Length: 207
Image 1 (cartoon, rainbow, N blue to C red):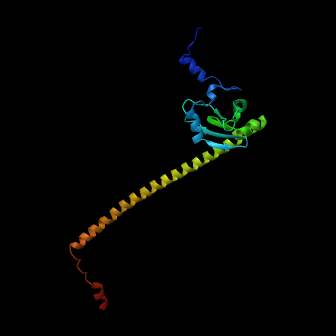
Image 2 (tube, rainbow, N blue to C red):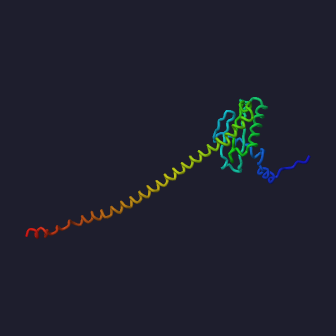
Image 3 (cartoon, rainbow, N blue to C red):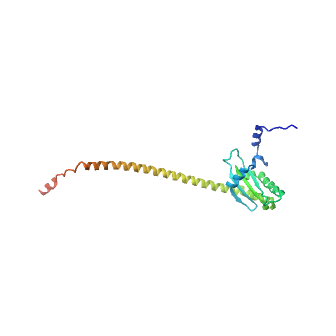
């Protein structure tokens, strides 16, 4: 049997294959434990009635430019493997058929249990779509507004500090300039007392 070895160029081609349409490519999956851990530890949470979703932005993650999906179906909630596989297929199907609804460039992790398995497909879909089209965008807008306020506050504090520093420098310079004549005056007083002036005006008035 002849085996073909995948070359580096073929691996690169696989990484950039199109994800348009109702497909679920390997690069749309969360694969490594590091990715799962990052989303669980740093992601934001949505607690629905049927599923729980955690997600985080991937703007700073190297070589990731699309939304990726991970699914958790714990054994303690779904003991049978057939049930775990069934609920995972359901979530993957909803994901691939509604890609326009998900936030761009994010990793999303969907936690499923008995409720997601027993609920109608349409109900699970509706809850995931609500998260993607309503809840997640609102959270993103609030985060952007908070970030803008913090940046404006930092900029204002920085400008105020620079203004106070300039004022202090001017005050020090003014203080040094004002003390100069004073020292000179003290020195002048040391050279002797001024002579009293003649009181000619008083004499003229007496006459």
